[in-house]
Image (cartoon, rainbow, N blue to C red; front, top):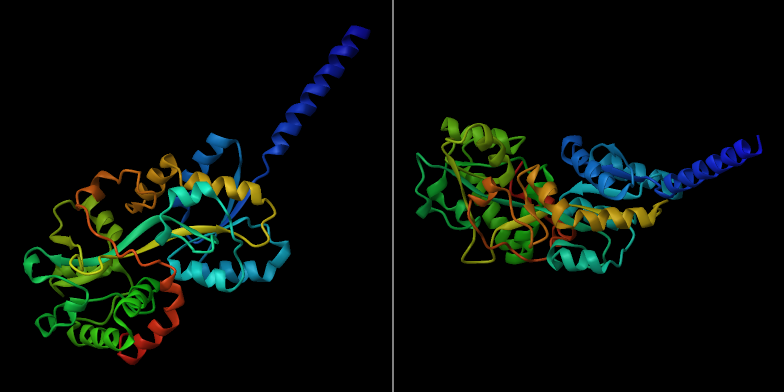
Length: 335
């Protein structure tokens, strides 16, 4: 009987140790505006690699930031993940993100793809460039974003609505490069050349080019990639804009640790893991984006588009100049 009790006590002790080990891996909670099928595979892999579980809440970036602000110190969120540097900049301006001094992140993510203060980091790169009909456009006619304001494109240009942050960031970066007066002149030229009212999404714009409604447009490359996966013979191609000038406009999907993160160490581990080669290949490949870590190979379909020179102005400028860009587009009649 005494031996049985001793073994029973030992079993209880072992169970207690196991329980303590399990409890040591506190979950990380992520507020994400990226959709579930783009983040769940990442978080599942992270948990498999580290034993740290990840909980997540998915919503649009606006409601998520409002929720963080309302929750304050009581928030369960450790990380805010969203698309576009403009949104990440807004979160920073609202005091929702905390600086993170991480040699790992600083080594893996180029300086122009992260907040100068370490409050957020880009984990995938999205290029917004020119697309054209292979049936009606000679790529030799194409050059820069500004050149699409030339009268030769009158009635041939399609654009996405100015209400989407992607175009707000593009115009903000143009202000940073060309100044406000020159940028407004370009945007007015775009509006004069429109073949149709601006579209609600890039996929509809691409479909309009295929249908002959317009001949050229500006999109994020992964929208074309998604179509090409199902329709490899689509009569639309990418053109890397402004290669003889500043380069293609790029933006990021990224994340940062929240100001009142209840599990800051877990947040750090997840953010650093997201910059690793394993995570980067998955993060970018799922949506046919470009890895932010330059040492990581791109998806084969993305690689088939060829190399390009990106504009390496810090993407945080997209946020700093966003309000001016919105007002400029409104003045120019770009709806």
